[in-house]
Length: 147
Image 1: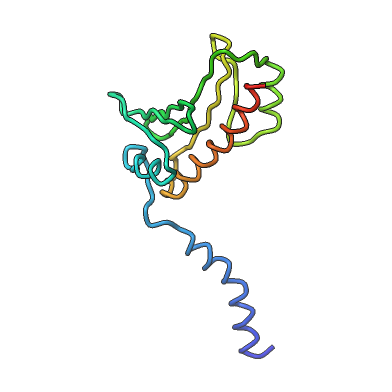
Image 2: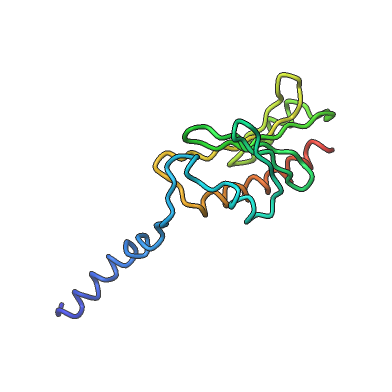
């Protein structure tokens, strides 16, 4: 093995790690209050307002959803009244889906939730992806509870 082959082999080993370093974001948020959540919602085109607690009320395709803010996590939450969705359908949802959970609340209303943990930090793009993922789950969930 000559020096050129050794260097080429070393580059093949190191290249994936260099690419991973490029993936780091320059806008890492470690606590929810650091993140510009309005900008993330505006990027997704989601109308919203902020209540006195600092939580957000969203209108996603005509469905009210709340973005609940705690110290190191965001929770997207929506509940619907007037559905006859039963526990078996909710359990099936949870078996087949990732990134969200469904349950019947204390009033028996179907509820959809999703959490984003800020432990270790998140990028702005992670927040917008989290919201987009919930939007996709919401579409499917509304279909489930509307049938």
